[in-house]
Length: 114
Image (cartoon, rainbow, N blue to C red; front, top):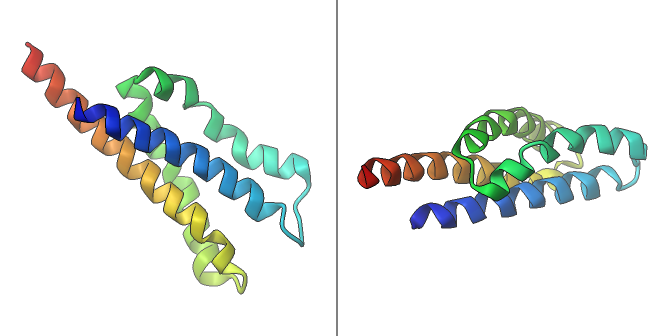
């Protein structure tokens, strides 16, 4: 039952990460639209599996988001316009946490059902 809330946290954070990356990189000096699409496209891959509540998808999405987390934290610390990366940093932390908590709670629910 609690795993549903972790699933919603992960889904909301995934959509927030995609939106914040797009908004951040379309600010002047803007990237090309193709660059923004290439940056955000891998984040669309786990969306169907996370929507269905697949624990395996949540597990590998937590690994995928680590690359984005490193990128965003590097920009947050090293760039003079790092404050624009703060929403993406919060969203990536929420996605990572939501995915891990979902997988853990889902495993407990399955074990309790046996």
